[in-house]
Image 1 (cartoon, rainbow, N blue to C red):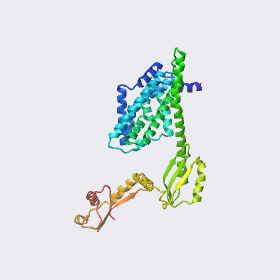
Image 2: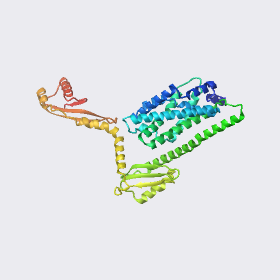
Image 3: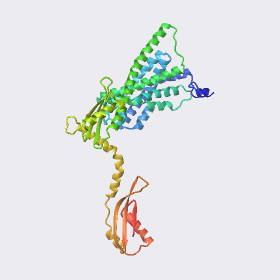
Image 4: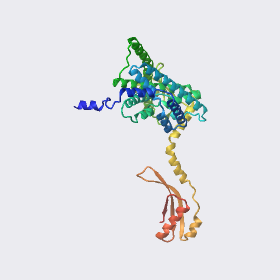
Length: 435
């Protein structure tokens, strides 16, 4: 009973749309003519602007508009139902969409006055392990939603998660700026996303047992099957190899970062720059630049022996230290590291700076005015001070006034003096003390 209940709860055949309707809808979305083509161009321009001005909201909007998921799912569906014509159509339209997107983004980045690579753009130049997982699981969610009777907001969410549009814009930026590293990295990410969305579509189509296309001529059927297998092999085998490389690189970088954070904690020596070089053929390398007291060789040897504890046995550890070794020190790296620390601390120092500014605010000389208004006042002091409450982290600033009178001051006169001082000193917060 429990087994049947669980099976029913996870049954993808429930609420499944008519197979012909699903195939027809995916075929229609695979086309890039008329409105779909113009929508693609507008989406790529919006995404380019978003990357150019580093606006996440604009980039998300462009991904929602983008129709790029259509031909990719069309290829996966065609492979799943043995429809060679749909596979060719999907690949052709995907190639057209890709070329048009790169051309449109290249033109934009060529004419825009903003030529700096922002963080949103740089994030699309190097695929990571998580990009593979996002593309695969996003593709699964997309095709499952596409096979339902009731359509939901899953497809727009998949378009945002898998992020097909930003890599194409980044590729255009790479061409416009002449930076082919950006171009190749972005196209690499786009290829990985496309292939794994296609694979997930194929798996769900096969799982739901969509009817395969059969031919009257057995030779034609074998020929079509052979062509499809060739296409699948060309697309999948390189992607598996690339995905393995991404996984291996991610594992190395995570282990290396943990190794550096745990083993290079010294009071008078600091790592100002670290370069992690991944190479499946020549071996991995960890290149560190240190400033401060030089580490003795025996200490370095001890640290090197600990590489195996972090699964970095075959990695080469290169340590550069000593300000007298100018040929080995890149002072721009030190400068960049110092600037990075400064900017990281900027958010915490803004509050302190505002408090210092309040403390340094010049107070007016009100001695003669007080003498005229309050002849019985003998002396006074005024200053801006910081008040720290013991049960709170936040600090407050206020203006403190201490006044000494020759005779007791009535409560009404005390309140009048407080009101006058607050207005005259332009104090947001004021404390009046009368001994």
